[in-house]
Image 1 (cartoon, helix red, strand yellow):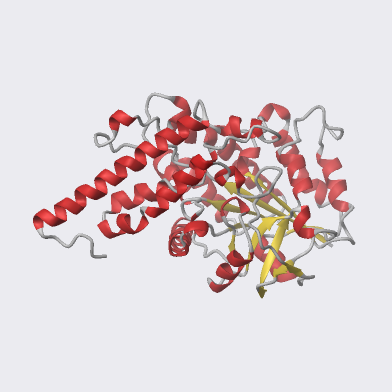
Image 2: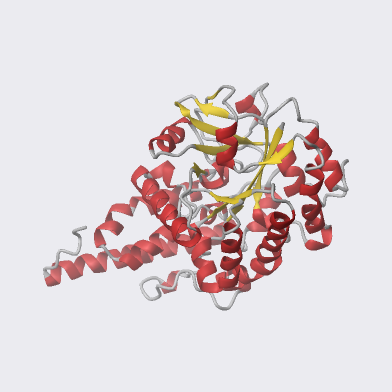
Length: 412
């Protein structure tokens, strides 16, 4: 038997607008760009909702009704959920309708889709707790499985996740980690035998996410029967096929005109033609199949780019400077007790801000250019650092207020 495990990352950041040096100390609206469409968060949410979230959710609901065996899982970032509440309530309702079917599992992550684990363990734990509460509030579920931002993982993270009580976590099925082994089995962390690990089958996942519309690909066109046959061939040589991808694959990265929605509509039926195939959520896979061995990851692993490392976010001095400066503000920001200021600072932690500063222009260059809403990585860096400068001014103003009024505003 082989279980198909669908997991979708659903995330949108609050993009920092083009914040000029002349606005420092004058303007506090870091994210609300109403003039430029590529930096207008409301317009982006509405566009992606219409092209991807709403039509894909409709297809998923149809499939669940048509095939009672069909199951899926999501990780929705806190920044996405907030924007759906504000800008597209009908999209949020469509996710809630899916949750009500009982066939959908929601996973934990950092609320702000951040790199907090790399820089502040207390901040990381706090964001995971915030995210869990939001999932409980909106979807009436308590997540059992954790998924770190962009599948960033190592042994230290595994220990932290196990200590937080999670059943398991997801990670990239990178060749240099697996070696001769297959991603189509359940593993456990070398740090804790009780923490289950599901590894992305990146070849089959990327066939859908990246190669589906690539006419030069030897297997184009990809049809549901063809893909199902590839899954069928794993029977007897694996327990689970973990298909992990961005939800924006459907309708946004792969446009409707490519036939991606027709492919999705037909795939479950084709898979279920094989009597030994079924669908399971991540927690069900972890509970259903025993671990076949340990996974030992010393250096950080991610699902980004060909290197599968952290270089997409921390690969140049601009990125390192921006993120280290941001996290160095943590103690002063929290001591202010100013909820608005803290919320703004946390929105700046979202990993996308540092991704936009990436200067990698080789095998992955087109990916970074496609997703970058700025004219250059340097423009992204300048806007971000100008905002950081303004935050410092606001912190200092609160310090002066404390001194002037004798108020202990720094007491948490």
